[in-house]
Amino acid sequence: MKTVKPRRPHGRWIYYVLYEDILWPCPVKWEWESSYEAWLPFYYSPTLEFIAGDPAKAVKVSKTRALDLPPKRFSYVS
Image (tube, rainbow, N blue to C red):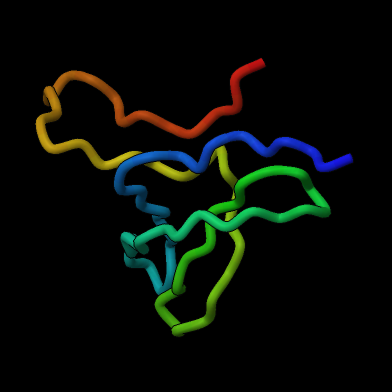
């Protein structure tokens, strides 16, 4: 029986990486990993490696964002 996977996260997502004392914003590409049965954020690091990141650390980019609100982070609905 085929397992139903959840929808891919919508919108633009950024993964911030600290590399050589600089905070780099890396665009995220979500890919389904059947071994984890979850969508994982993949990003190009500053050294141009394609790396899987922690989904809890991916930050969603919004067009209009209030300055006093923290950025939205990815979390699975329980």
